[in-house]
Length: 429
Image (tube, rainbow, N blue to C red; front, side):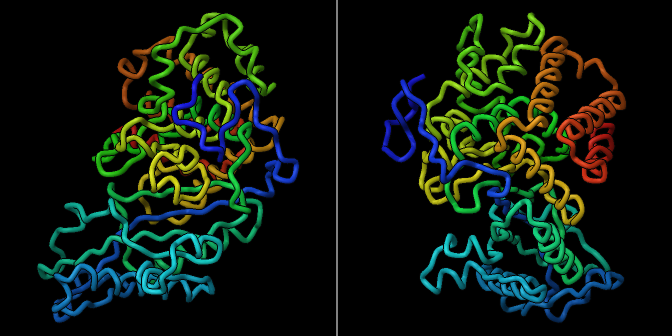
């Protein structure tokens, strides 16, 4: 397959040869870093007005009524309060205002600080805007916090995130609605991009497992179809989706796939599935010769779909935002929440998926990919299944499929059971 963009020398190699691996930068589990982005809303009481929720024991900060219509002043005040709360846990934090006035850029702080800035998509909905005690209302400010990158294998990483989130939820009346999201970035600790084979393994698993992983989204949410945020389906809106819709499958398709585990997963598919959409997709993923082409293949051709639910756009270097972004794969499908346990468990599951893909010959990868492909084969074999099931039956099936995938990845039940309950609860409504 020809490159989507001309070779600029940074990532691409000759179409007839595969990139040579630098043995000093071979991807290992210990090299994987994670960073989390949380979008939420923080409420303020207008100075001189009553507390909208006097029974909530958490403090609500008052804002000068003269500033309530000054968006920049409200934001700067909110960002400073959030940064101060994070610093109170012993972590380093800075605000976008401090970064800008110092003449520096965000990437100077990726390794060391939590960064507090505006959450562009977040806005109060009807629930947040409603009148409360005595007719009082909150003034809401959208906030995004981004953690520093941390080693996924370090035991303090989860505890660090937990301390920060616990302090924020106890110190402020935070809210998260359908305009808010939880994003998880996974990359290398040294800032270098993953090697191409690791990205191809990760892409193969995420493509195949996407419907199961996306079942964590509430189908009743106004943002289920990504109306307010960017994070649509890889299987529907990427260039890969378009390519395979125009590609005829061939016998022996898997023979030129380098990875033994991917070849094995394809070989054991039933004969009828060996011309399936997933069969063609994995073949296309393993045909690319450089990170840049893979990043473009897994991104959408138009701006709205540039950053999908599994976001590989930073490798495609297609726009200025991608060029400025860290070289990470971003999971951006989880809806906004201020539930600390749910956030921590999602981060843990995302890190596990990255680990099994990055580490060659991890048996969990083989098991998870084979399981995901079998589920997709069942979907294709009975494309009307979801329409004929009752809500209760579908909800329980989706919950079971999610749990089965997590078991193949050997994720502890205590980590995924909250999502199983969420899936069943949301999809049965």
